[in-house]
Length: 264
Image (cartoon, rainbow, N blue to C red; front, top):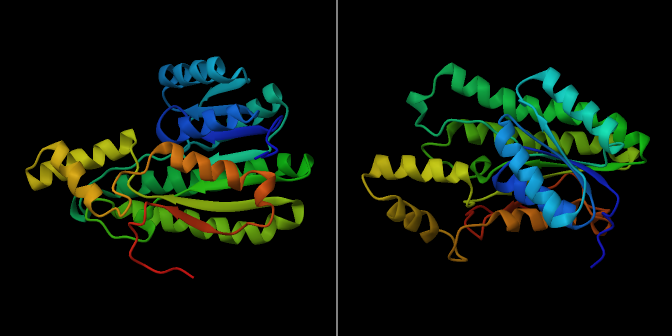
């Protein structure tokens, strides 16, 4: 199926590993040049080199902390200068602490909100004028299923993921006239380095092995396995493609059926 992504210019925040890296690779395979950012330059360069080698596309690696407004401005301006513009923005970066409510300090809450909520806001605000200049664009906010499901060690995740879903809907109404579509994806239990941290904490709290913690996590997923980063990337590709030109302001969960709520 032709997705119409050849020649597009994409930005993926948190692009050095996990969902971000997999999504950047998927976009590049479809013919998009990609800018990826993260705080750690060594891992970021490694990811960029791998994506270039596998796709032959231009891949720009920009060190950026999504909690820093100047870094975000530099990310967008560098992408425009080096790649020629911005068509697609995948807001994906996160920096959080997996811990029970009473263990989370103010700094933990504020850091998570600054990186994820304000980081998404700032990136979108900087990218939108460039999308308008190119006749439209796509913004995808990667949230998380903690927005819908409670969990004892994902307290701040629930707050930030709910927020980025709300932002997607509000923003979508305001930029649709400019040809910009905005959606949100809520990954469920997904095999990423961050999920490994959560499993480690769950194993510690329950005095079980990591393997048992994973078994318990998967037991509640009807498809019988964790979500893989590729599952998220596939939905991203569709939503940013010409095949999804009437979809905006939506939040879609990719969680293998684990959610218990009904959302109309």
